[in-house]
Length: 339
Image 1 (cartoon, rainbow, N blue to C red):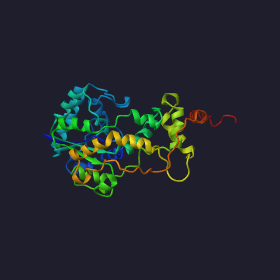
Image 2 (cartoon, rainbow, N blue to C red):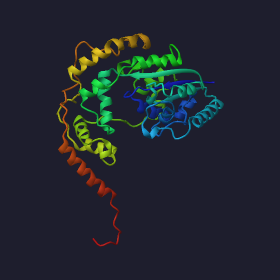
Image 3 (cartoon, rainbow, N blue to C red):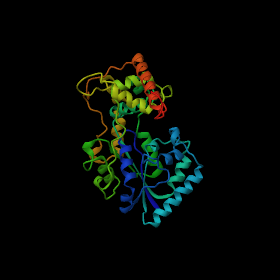
Image 4 (cartoon, rainbow, N blue to C red):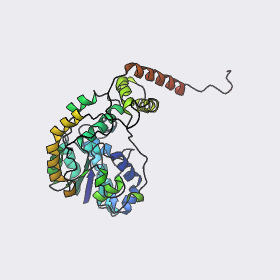
């Protein structure tokens, strides 16, 4: 049977960048003895269609389009082909598999049963760094969340129970947790760090370098998009978000502003500090045990951004966007048509 290294994210830890490198370099990985299956792989390089078969909550684009039994059969067939090529190790990556849900646990167990040994790899960011980035992503995709303060109060960001659930599923000592902090990386790049964690004898320079992805929007653009959203109200939302970011000047000159206030930081510390220390003791290498511990003193990354909801400015930009779309979509006039 084949061994599986399952990369489950988490969100906002460079997963799309890693997956792009792995997908573009799947031939190089094969030469190193590691298969990166095509079955279940999305265009981005992530195995989100696979996750859609075994995870409970998935974006509509990755919902199952075939019966689970058919999907599992296709995956088994590809594994046999990889084994025939001498590849007895497989790497699968989707951050959508991080959260375990009871609803589809039976399917997940059937999927994992295809492999002799399973190792789960996961990267984590401390909650005060994860939540601003996640909030930015939600607004960028048109979900129109509340203010950042309210979002942090209501957002679950507890890692330890989920890691314990994965450990119970794949076995004690089979969950490798790494901090998403450059000072802990082994190698010059995130891809180097990931390959080292997965014990793959390659370097980032051996793989095609993907373009930067999932870049954050300015906080001024975030205010506009919150006022304009949700996404169903604006045609071609993803392009509109880029249009707004390109045309809205930053609200604060100089240093990059932050949504993280000292009050929010203190609340997050009370919620997660002790649990993060326990997580480090259970799942991280000795040198990284303190990686997710909160600092005693809060040091803001930049000036605090005062959130607003500029409805009138958003309406102006939406109107400009609609005018732009009409111009882009207008049929071209025949060459001999009168001007």
